[in-house]
Each structure stands twice: as structure tokens, then as C-alpha cells.
Image (tube, rainbow, N blue to C red):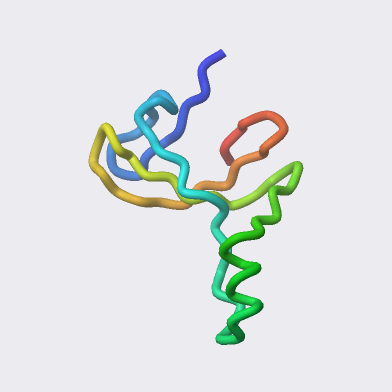
Length: 75
């Protein structure tokens, strides 16, 4: 089974063309302690989460996808 990601510019490609950019976590506020937790303590949920991906071997753009971490299904 091949894990494929759909780039908004290039279409569906094998995951080997992409670099994982981490969870898509919105800014929590200006409080330094809260920002530290947001950046360095990801939720790492089991299930559906929004993630940032970089198309390193393609158009070199960043985009956000929703992926189920249990099945790698992107929806």
C-alpha cells in the first residue's frame, strides 16, 4: 500500500516527494508559556488532525491536509 498525498498544484503524488511540517496548530496568544507549549508540545492525537506538508520534490509549496493518523487516509 502506497501512502499518497494530493498537492493542490501538482495532483496526487507518492509521500516520498513531501516533507512533513507538523501539526497545523493556530497561534494560541501572546503569552510566552502558551506559545512554548504550542510549538514544542504537539497534541499528537490518534485520529483526524490537520497537518502541514511541503512538496519538496515538486512545486515546493506548503499546504495543509486533514489526515487520519490511524489509517493515513487524507480527507
